[in-house]
Image: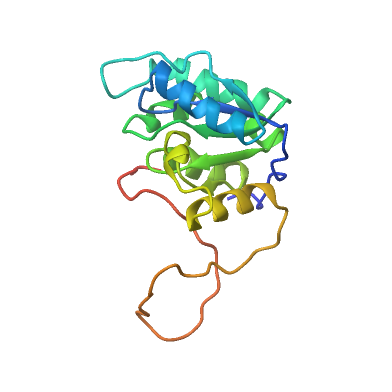
Amino acid sequence: MAGVVKPRALREGDTVALVAPSEPTNKSELERVTRFFEKNGYIVKPGKNILEKVGDYAAGAAAGRAEDINAAFADRAVKAIFPVVGGMAGSQVLEKIDFGAIKATPKILAGYSDSTTLQMAVLAKTGLVSFHTPNALSLPDFQPKGYTMTSFWKTITEPVADGVIKPQSVWQEVRVGEAEGVLFGGNLSCRGL
């Protein structure tokens, strides 16, 4: 794995790209997510292939999905990239991703579910830290002042050092003691990385 690279914090007025590396979205969902980011002070740039669809499981052909991801990383105006939704087709884009461009222009990559397929590949090939967060389509549903949204915005907008994650529920120790290391998030159903 390459050395760890942290992207710069997102600032109000920045451009965020919306992509669909896996499952499709539709126009009303895209408009809802766009309104959410605009309400929070960001400019939204959806991928040009984001509304494409192959059956009910893929947002268009893998080449088009990868093209949108590559374009978002290459676009100097874009400061953060958010998959709209997860799914089961993210691994199809990996061979078409320009990891050299990602390494040259590190930026925020945030999502979960099948989006972790892309996130783990980006980490392995470039060292870029990504963020295990709700996908863009889920963001408007969270309470603005709740634990998830407060932590989400703080993590991507404040240039802070490594920190402690405060439990929001009772945690049970499996083995008493302290540990230190690198934490890898992800979706266990995303195999083959």
